[in-house]
Amino acid sequence: MTGRLKPIGLGVLSFTLIIVAWELAVRAGWLNPFFTSQPTAIMTALERAARAGDLARSLRVTLGEFAAGFGLAIAIGFGVGVLGGWFRTVEYAIDPFLWFVYSAPLIAFYPLFVLWLGLGTHTVVAISFLLAVTPIAVNTMTGIRQTSPQLVLAARSFGARPRDLLWNVVLPSSVPMIVAGLRLGVGRALTGVVIAELFVPSGGLGSSIAYNAGLLKTTDMLASLMVIVALGVICTQGLGAIEARFDSWRTGPGL
Image: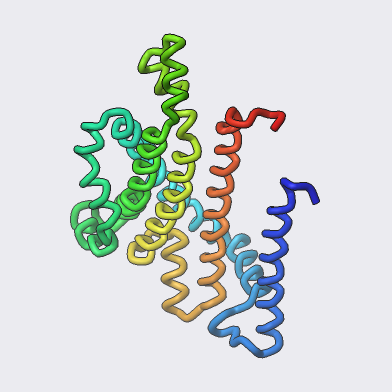
């Protein structure tokens, strides 16, 4: 197994072992399927939901809300992070607000969001946005602040203007920190969508979890949960691929 494929292979192997152990434990009677279900039953539930169209409808709603919330978080968080990292006075001005949003228990403000935005998609998007925007902004700001002074000095010695420094030196060198913020933001944005959907009857995957949990349908509840987990894994791995693509200038293709 090559160096690149080894982490993937080990990850798939460990995940497969957990699934097999779960299935065998249920069949052996060590776990009660009423409370834990089992992988084969969850796959059957997913297939049934896919054939009926319920899975596609729920996934479409959740993806739309997630895309809106995370997209706003990227646009605003990245912009705020760049301004705060580039201009010290902007950092001082926005820093209290960023840490307030990060530290505040935003779910406790859910009744206020409902009053302000209504019981619907807007509230879900708002909670998703607020949970995701802070790590994106803070990591972007930190990445810009941690740019190597030697890189900046070398660029200036070749006559680089401030705009050239920002776009050709500072931002490329900040890619790892920016992507790390995006990865944190993905998880928080998806968490915000699901938590909000537990209370908002939006028809998304979170609403499906709440509905099936209320009816004690463990299998259907876990089926929706597995789709959400898969969505999170796909997004984080996709961001990892983007990071490798845009950060390849550090090592070069031959190293």
